[in-house]
Length: 235
Image 1 (cartoon, rainbow, N blue to C red):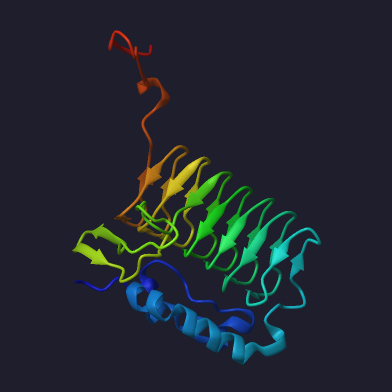
Image 2 (cartoon, rainbow, N blue to C red):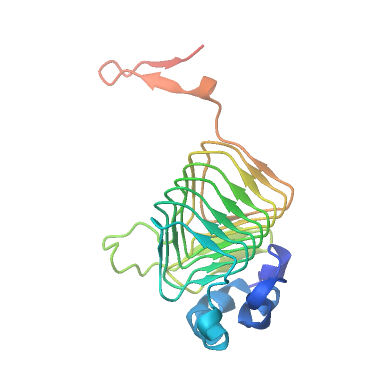
């Protein structure tokens, strides 16, 4: 299996307290190795930061919820009714908009999560911008969703890639831009400078740098009679 190096998709933190923690070596990890060691690396980062896990220049709205093990860098903004929990990291200048849910996620420097964004077990690169209604799922549908056991795999140019875990959402590369109402994962890797148009649903695959991902146009929507089973193409 060909390695999938995170440094080919996202940039290591360079500002604030995170650069001197294991997150400062993010670029050097293979994805599967990082996912396996992520809890351990986060604990190491927390031990190094101590009382400095939340930078004094960060803004957290009084109606936002931030977990006890979340790391927040300088000039980060977390807006009202958003929840950041369970080992998440918000790098310098990141912005978490209205009513977002960020769980076990890494959000890169200057990245923007618009509003009503839900990401889980996901890595977001520098200056990526996710618009309204983007959801990243981290587990595959199974008979018992509370105890997922199906390993996440994805298709890459080098063949199948095994993530080694049943919990992985996506790697969203530096400067990726998205539209609204998008569903990603489990098991998506999006290359730098790519664009994901509104309405896209994407899972178990890697997208090269500088790509545009589109959904079927609304003009291609088909309506079929449930009784007569007659299909009509909309004009």
